[in-house]
Length: 136
Image (cartoon, rainbow, N blue to C red):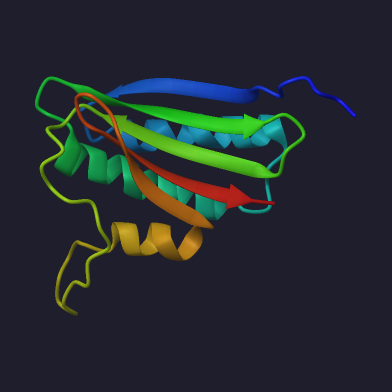
């Protein structure tokens, strides 16, 4: 039995509060998934990254600031964890909403909840961490 602590593979990147940060975060994630050989759920992961990055820009990042994207993949494990760290005030509750049929927004966390195996919100000072996880 191996008693050594298995540290996660980590990829992290910082993005400014700009629309072009969303496709940049997707490209960064796609490159990490390809390197780790995680093709089976790549579309689901990339969509969730887009939704979490959009939410961070719209709700969690103050003007002139940005967000951090962290990707964790434990050595030998079957888990992928995606985290978006923002520096917002954290006053708005992060929750799945039920938008009206004519609403043009408000479905991001509904998609994250449906596509990922788990998701949640953690504390950060300042701001918050919104995360989702995928199992092989």
